[in-house]
Image (cartoon, rainbow, N blue to C red; front, top):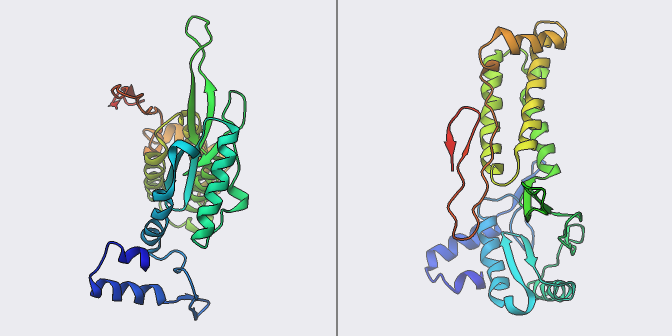
Length: 268
């Protein structure tokens, strides 16, 4: 509340906010009121998180500890050396202690981004330093590539599995495909930046396999029958959207690269 009051002086707004913070969360039919913090998953929690952690942004010294990139309660610090990374971790831990917080040990580590080394997961993407093959057999260009992380792939498969579950057997196949398409549009819309083409193809193949299995169970036939229905009995594979093509973020002062997708459309 002190952090909010630095910028907000409207007493009606502050009173409403205090009431929202004090409101408990219902779990198993019981209302629980925590002494500190805000209820997990509350609609105002991300906003209050950014207000509270803005103090971290203000106190951070980029020249001494590297570049801090923060999105709500997830953060990455980009450093030039191992020594600077260790100093940044110590400084970050100190600032969080001053706020009554501590970094999550399971997700906090120092990663050396180098060719052939490990990468890091941030905001659903896996980031890794790779080298592109040169067109003339040269050494090629090294760059930071990104694609959907393993956890994001696991989430996508789980969601597709739920949408094609046998419990929905009474629904029409077209309705199931519409639901899968709705999810794939949102998922691919988020992950389409970077180098996601191969993982997009894996998710679409998984969706085709699940729909083929759904058709087979619905008609009490083999999975091969389901694949035949998708390939020959319907136009354009039941209308399941394609995830071909990728959009690569531009380099500084360069325009977006235009990449045609499978349907011939041009995307920036």
